[in-house]
Length: 542
Image (tube, rainbow, N blue to C red; front, side):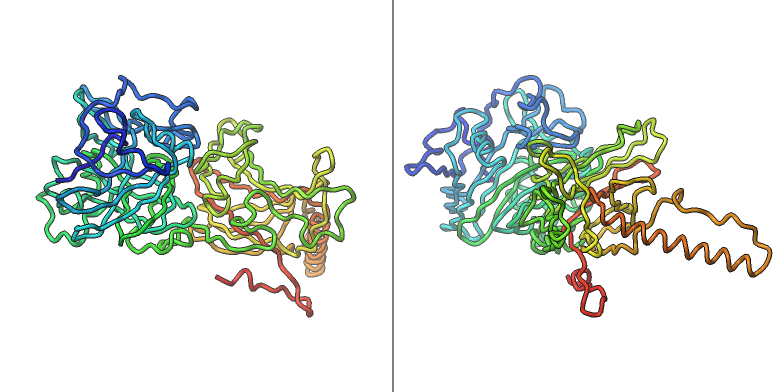
């Protein structure tokens, strides 16, 4: 029998003794299922932030104050007399005579005594964190521990299946000392068909030392390969079929005996504008790269910016100290903006809540760079919709931006991915000739590209056209000389722009409204060798 602790060690029908220990750390073992109502009201309660999350596709965002999961979002209509649940529960195989395991979960703080008993953990960890202490005992299989949530309950408090296929899939942000799995819980009524629940459809989650986000379509949830025969009707589309009758979702760690730390930071749906799936079957170290290679930053070092070491700001003073303005203070803090000032309705969907004063540090720590979804909407704007992000170079004592000579960088290099090209602009103090810009081509895979100053160009309206008549070869020669002059003038103006740069700005812009994923990782510059040639090792090294 698959005995789940569906009530997060709450006071209702559970002994509080199971939630205590002499040293203050909290552990728990599985018990008979609790089928009493968890004090849920007729509607889903809102979080302290006024909503369940920061984005419409969030299920659970602890940074927004969420204690319970908003299981009703995007789901098909709940059955009659059924209430959304979303309270976190935990389970382990300790003291289960049928399995013989002795595993537990060690919590960092004492649990609460009501339905939101894990709220103290969520507040402490800004997520669900603990240590899965796996002890095999007399088990013939690997021991395990799980945390999860139930979709809904009937009037008697029994877990009830719900159709959540409209979610299109799920996203999870987490860390884990061990490989884990995301399990579609179909409840005890179907458990017997799936080896007592051990063979429920699941997607694998690789070990992740650093926070990582994984998104899966329903099609990626598979019945384990060791189950040789599938239940009738479950041979194909198992994930989607499970999503149409889902009882709960579980994060499960099953491994050799030992202690494995974990932290669940976020749950979301794939309903609108969220990243595509990452292949769970051949994924490598989640903290480094995914086998699909798409939309993943690798955490490289950059002379100007190493996100994993200095998440809050770019080292803009590097190699520019000899031309640094008097009394200037290095800036380098990331900023972002959209097109609302010109009538646009664009925005950025961030994967986590921003920090104080809209700091992007939480995003950087999660993504190993700045990542998100550029949601472009033209609105009444007369220009193509866009969002921008960038960093200032320096500022004076009052906080006003100052122009700085960054020409000694020789180039600006980025680790990045983007579904559409990114326009890199040098924001200068003198904009009479427009802002020099260069293009980073679109790439779903993280790549490194260096843009030396020769890649930058001026807007077309700043280039004087040839106005003479072309009647013979001498006129053609004049036109070519004019073109050479303009090219030389542009090169000079770009170089001058690099000597008076206020900020480096990356603009994501397209003529078509839509949601476009992007990520900006390490930032570098180019050194020049003794012969005056660029050293490109950083760009080609992987």
